[in-house]
Image 1: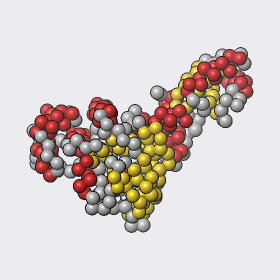
Image 2: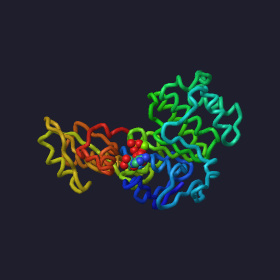
Image 3: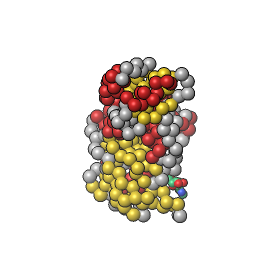
Image 4: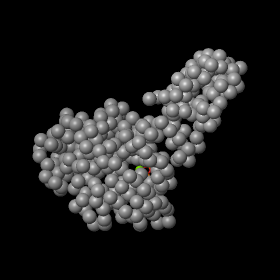
Length: 311
Ligand SMILES: Nc1ncnc2c1ncn2[C@@H]1O[C@H](COP(=O)(O)OP(=O)(O)OP(=O)(O)O)[C@@H](O)[C@H]1O
Ligand SMILES: [Mg+2]
């Protein structure tokens, strides 16, 4: 799936300003951006709910043009809150959806209800479903026709932690089976544990795209904790290893942040040892959060808190 130069305005408000996405097949692609960045607008264009002012879309290797609705049979989508018949049960709603599209066996519907954890409530009216249950039903609906490409706009909305984990496993399994899963989120942490490839959008433009692995390598950090009086000597010992070494912390000990790949932690440690410096702490990890904030105009807290160090 790909877009080239996609533009869309709502009246005088420019929502997408030449969006170029390249989504490889068979991966989970995390489409990440802050509120108002243009994620839902992109999803509406990809599903034919809206037409672009300019630019082109390619779905499953073929151009997707205005009126090309048949192409969408191969695409499953959940954009905005799904609409269901409130007076019908979850199962009846999926049947109604199936009747409107490609034919689907009763077995498939039960399989999907099981998959999204709604089997026990399948006979209950949707009007009595919680927000998260409706969201789960929406995901089941998107999967109904066994699509090759799945477009999900903020599917984690309204899901509880167990529901988020279950959804993540489902999406990972679909990608492992060769499906392409394009999923939007405004939460970095969510995308970081889910996606193979990440595209970051801000103000209607793509600001970064690449494999999660490459992004994490780029954002690698090694942090060293030493006594305050050793900060200068430590900085000197590590001179030249990274363009800039930040010092943080106001107590008797300080943390020095060295922007190098995490795999170079041993090299950092050796340099310290050669200078006779014994660090009281050494951590290697990645710092995507400041990058995300910087790219999306949130103002980076460059000194880096320790929370980014996971993985
Ligand atoms: N129906 C609409 N009419 C007018 N402006 C709109 C409409 N839908 C979206 N916009 C504007 O387009 C821009 C992009 O909105 P969009 O909903 O695509 O963002 P988003 O990335 O999905 O945000 P969120 O994380 O809040 O869901 C915003 O400035 C928004 O105000
Ligand atoms: Mg949105």
